[in-house]
Image (cartoon, rainbow, N blue to C red):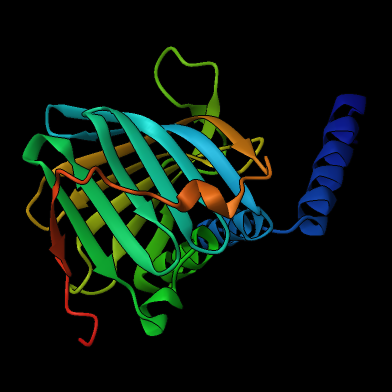
Length: 225
């Protein structure tokens, strides 16, 4: 005869099985899709950004307005800026007294935007959990909990061999992006003090570089390419 303790354990197991069956099983691919859905409803956001490449850190403030307006004003290097107004990409490099500009045609703009970018990642990379869906600390002493996704490229055409996304488990906003390039160098983007839907105006993405800077047009590709 089963003991009372055994009966209790049996019912606990049955209830637990029913609970699991009634819940959606969230795969890594589905979790990334949920993050993409979160970004799809964000009209604008601001954040402090730190970009680490090798031993060099770049620090600034990022502004984004859907679907494709982007601006980063750097404090390190001071006065450096990256601005995209939906049609023209401008990079101001005060150290070199240079302004780089690139016209972006409609076909290239069609994949712009954070949610669309995440959709491209889902298409071009295989997604898996780093350790599982259970949130873990962002850093060893951090109280913030994140879910980490590993994205492994499907083809050699992708510029990054592997990308690690650290996603805040409460907000489902990306807190950190770590990428390993085909040259085996590491790049890390940290986003802090994220503010969403602040009503950022398009006027913020109007940028006039200093007149003394030398202008270099179409530094990435010819607009007709």
